Amino acid sequence: GAVVSQHPSRVICKSGTSVKIECRSLDFQATTMFWYRQFPKQSLMLMATSNEGSKATYEQGVEKDKFLINHASLTLSTLTVTSAHPEDSSFYICSAGTGQTGTEAFFGQGTRLTVV
Amino acid sequence: AQSVTQLGSHVSVSEGALVLLRCNYSSSVPPYLFWYVQYPNQGLQLLLKYTTGATLVKGINGFEAEFKKSETSFHLTKPSAHMSDAAEYFCAVIIPTSYDKVIFGPGTSLSVIP
Image (cartoon, rainbow over all chains, first blue to last red):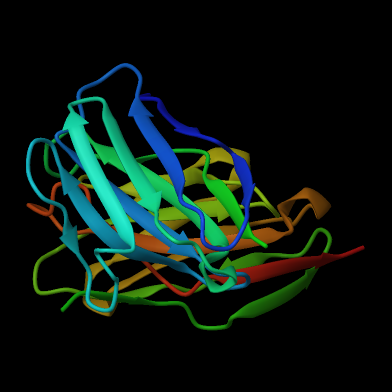
C-alpha cells in the first residue's frame, strides 16, 4: 500500500515558539492531504484539508493563523503550529489521498507535540 | 452532514470471549466504511474496510465486519479476544467524492480481562 511518512514523531517545544510538522507521501502523488488532531482519550478531529498549490480549507473553530498549512508539492504538506501554547499539546496526524474517490486514506505515524 | 457513532466508549471482554464493537453511520450517500485500531501512543492501523461488493469483510488479526445498509451499521467482531487486542478502535467513513477525507467515530476502548 501507499506510504505516508510524518516527521518528527515527537517534539517538545517551549511556549511561544513555532513547530513545523512534515507529511510526505513516499510512493504516490497526493493531491489532497488532511491534518487531524487528537487530544488524549478522544477521537481524531479534522483540522484542515490541504490541496496542492492552493490555500488550505480549515474546519470550523480551527485558527488558520495559528495552524499554518503549506502544500507546496504533490508529495509534501507541512503544518506549522505558531506561537505554541501548552493547550496546543496534542497528537497530530496527517493523511494523504491519491485523488481517486473511494480509496482508503493513508495515514502518517503521527506527531506527539508537547509544549512546555 | 455525515456522522459516525460508536455505542459504548468502553468495552470489556474476557480473554477468549466474543468481541463486538458497534458502529452506526449517517450519510446522505452510501459511504465507504473503515475500522482502525490505535495502540497507546501509536498511530492508526487499518483493520478492514468496505467499499463495494461482499458486505462481510475480513480484516487483519481475525477481525471482521458486516455492512448492513438497512441498519446503517458496520459492527466489528472477533470470535475470540486476545490480550493483544486491548486498544482503541475507531470506526470511520469516507464519503465518495470527498477525496479521501476521513470522518471518525468517537472511538471505543477495548479492554481484555485475563
